[in-house]
Amino acid sequence: MGSLPVASWTAGVSSTPDFALNYTNVLTAKQNESLTFRNVSLSYNGTYTVEMTKIGEGRVSATFYLFVYDVIKNVSLHTDPDGPDMPILKASPTKAVFVSGESVFLSCEGVGVPPPSTTWLFNGRSIPTSSTGTVNLTSVKTSQTGIYTCTMMNTRTGAKLERNITINIYETPSGEPLCSLHPVNGNSELQFLCVWPGGTPEAQVSFPSLSTNGTGEGNFNITSSAIQSLNGQEIICNAEHPLIQTQCSVIPRAPLDFQPVIFTNMSQDERTTVVIHCYTEAMPEDVMYWVKDGHRLENGPKYQISTITAQLFIQDFNASSTDLDTYTCTAINPLGSRIMDAKLLGPQISTSGVFLIDDHTEVTLKWEVPPTSVITGFDIQLKGPGFLSLRPRNVTSEFCTIQTMSASDRTTNISGLDPKSTYYFRIIPKAGRTAGEQSEQHRIGPGVGLTGAAIAGITAGIPCGILIILIVLGVIYCSKRAPQNVHHIYTTTTICSMNLLLNR
Image (tube, rainbow, N blue to C red; front, side):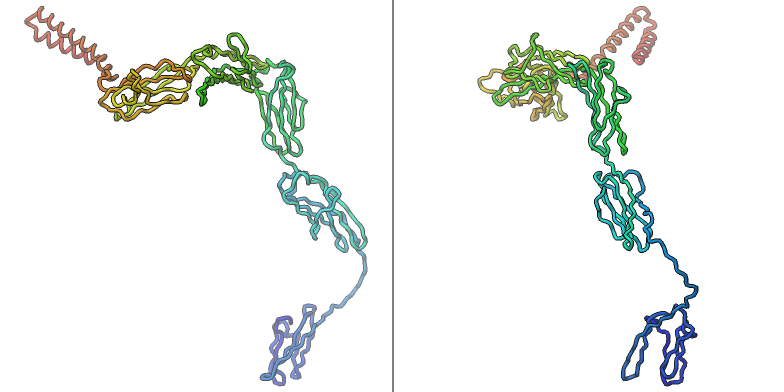
């Protein structure tokens, strides 16, 4: 039966046939090569193969199918509804909102005879549907938000049933909300703006401290006239989206105190440009006005004001002319103003010093300049043995320039010195072709003077020397008054003096 051996025997020979266990009471084999089935049940339905072999001559086989029927009794007839019945729609995973980029699986189940066919529509247009009536949406986009309709139809009767499911796909706005502040109506009012564009649906933005009922979708602004009361207060914008809630803020602020910063630049043709930078924190951003000698400066050949008004460029600056003057910058916004003077100074050195390296063959030279001093560079000069060859023949000064530094430099190293020789150093500040006053001269080498430790030792030794002199005078005085007790007095005085010294 199939591939299962159920019976085997040798024809014409008196022998016991070999039957499979569950066929022992069902099959009977006879010498005439016949096989009888009896008392069979439905489980014996199947295909059987008979194979006959004659040893030494060949093998033949035949196949037949055994049909076993059950007895049918008490037959009744009834009809089922054709259907389909009301379809059951499901979206997986089960949730009200899907995020852009996720996957959504839609299924539609219904019963009918014959089984109904299923098709899906999106916003009234057909979409691909599997043979089992499902739809798999991968990496969904906000454009796929809408109504999905399952249609089930009985192909025999043409009966149809439809059911809808709404899929919502959201996307957060890009970046973070941005708060800003702008003067309006002649700087008499302030406009607060909060922007958080994009996203599906658009975010709701508002300034609750300025308006309790005002809100906007992705963009909202409100104007306030009570600007002085808002100075220094943090104004918060609440930005709310179904997927995320966040905020931004802005602080209205009058210009704060500031200090002018001076920059210099020298072109290849040695023309000097001085830049005065007046920058202060203010919200909304301040406007800077520039004044010299009571006159407001405007853009022209001599003066250039940057687009943000915080920088003044002085062209062809001459450190020996009236360009060295006081320039006033005034920062103004609707909440107030700040005024600061920048008094430009010629090239100067405020402090300087020289420091020996351990082996005394190298020194570090350091210096500082006043904050408003106009500097384009420095000449580092030295006087000492071994460097005289650097001095031009027509120059009588023993100092020679050994280094040229930029305007931003404040330190340099000088090596190749003889520890046994004496050297002098100085710095010459420059503003273009104009040389400023030299720094103080710094000397290193033998006999430079007492070290700090030596000076401290001398200072500490002076009181001790005075004390010893007083002790000696006391001994002499006592010995004259009482000669017989000289030794005793001297010993007592000496012990007291020693105690005094120890106490000191």
